[in-house]
Length: 78
Image (cartoon, rainbow, N blue to C red):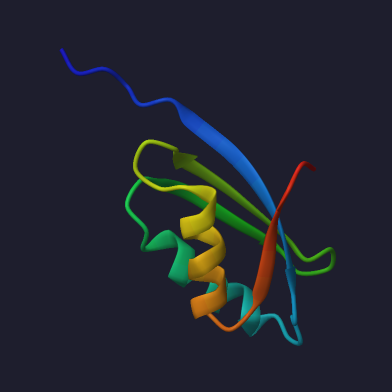
């Protein structure tokens, strides 16, 4: 029997959104990371919510992926 990984819900603040297509770019980039279960980008507030296995992908990895999509992000408490 395999143990189910503990899923962590992390919230990030991203800057530089100019259009709804920015959402798709971030979701694709972050969604490619191993261990990412779900990505939800809130265009109006600049929030990026990610459900991920923290043993496979860190918050720094996610910030880097958002950066690779062309946007600055920081890990946020809420």
